[in-house]
Length: 608
Image 1 (cartoon, rainbow, N blue to C red):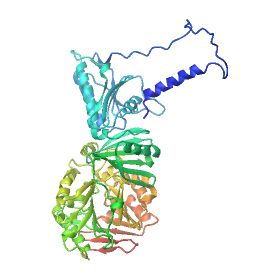
Image 2: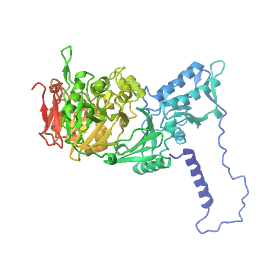
Image 3: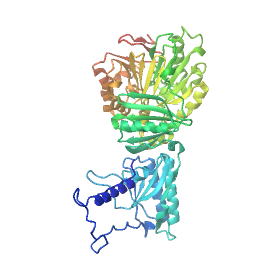
Image 4: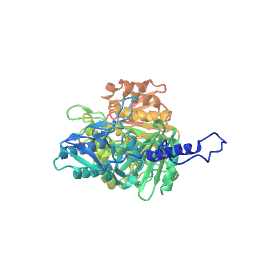
């Protein structure tokens, strides 16, 4: 981004040059005899206004400055949090109450350039953008630009550091009588680095910095808006120049992705065409994805998808009709598990028994069974309960990797605060146990990102949506963090695995990838329950997927109550629709042989 002070200087230079070269018509010889000495009628440039040595923040118990934050900032977000820290400090020191406003202006109006203001975090003010353009992504700053004090840091800890520095100055500048607060102008030029990991990212040239997002597993996300493919490609060259090495790239429907590493970090960069954005993710050095060139295997069986029925009667006579447990057998004999359902021994045993039965021709014992990938779509107990709570069932098997993308703890807490009606205080917190479970199973943990591809025998699996694509919005419900994947088997059968994705996540998939998500088979989102407020987005996605075959992970007792919902009924109304299979009760199985032909799925019902 071009520094605005530099731009102003260039404009002045151009103006001066024009004045120097524009005297007389083209070809006219200048009059060298003219008197060039100063005269009474000549004017000289006015001196630049002097910068005051001190700024009055509070005078006679009244605040002179006002606090400004981003209009779109969450009430529980870091900008509002730090603005309140400043406000409370001023109140404590002087008794004065500072106003807290936003950078919103009505259409046709301009941002206020005359009022004395403290700009906290990202704002639409040019003064904020000027400071941002001079910083690395892990930096913080407190700067005076015109009549604005800019307090900025890219992430929560950096912004907190900037706030802390300003607060220290305020304590030093408070009067003894508690009625005034004065800051020395010379002190308002501070900056530093707080986040070394973020600081390792080269600066993105072009577009506008839009937001920082604290992704899961110590991953930081930088979002750039109003950019283009050329600027994105130029950024990849900057990664090269900074010592990062590219080991995989991908293109999906005009969207571009690349993963780079150095000896400390993994960077996943993506260009999102539908919103003309670039998203840059940096995390501690991560295990490599399942690369195509490393996918060497020998077919020993046929591949198939099995959806396991997990509905069971509870002690009060009602039914637990949710839960998702999908088992995929690959042609090399390994398995892929999607979720695995409830934390009960009976549910875990369903998976174990199914794997034993489906590998009986080539696995002599449980120790011969290999799970190539255990995918956890999101942190709900009816999805990853058996993995976290029934680990002992799988210890004899070879589990190669666990694929996840969870909310960071800070974002989970923010979501609980912002959407208390959609969250319980403990919801999703068991994600912390995944590293210990992986260690017990001898498995690697991969944090998956949009655009990454896993090649596992005959399966090509692309990550189409994670919560990072919803960022920087606060997660309205844990289901919005559900990972969505497109699976393709031997280039012949496509399957959309959606977990508990809400309408928001599915709408992003449809808008971002368009007809690319059209598939032969679709797994119904969230068991056919609520879309969490975006019915239209879900309907749009189902229309785009336009699948002939529908796999519905729900108990047979609940299914009649939900199949008619408008956001579900569209599944049966798309032109390609042919059939639906409901997972059913504990012990039921829906087996889909691959490559798939409509009508060849096998229904096994435990009760006949």
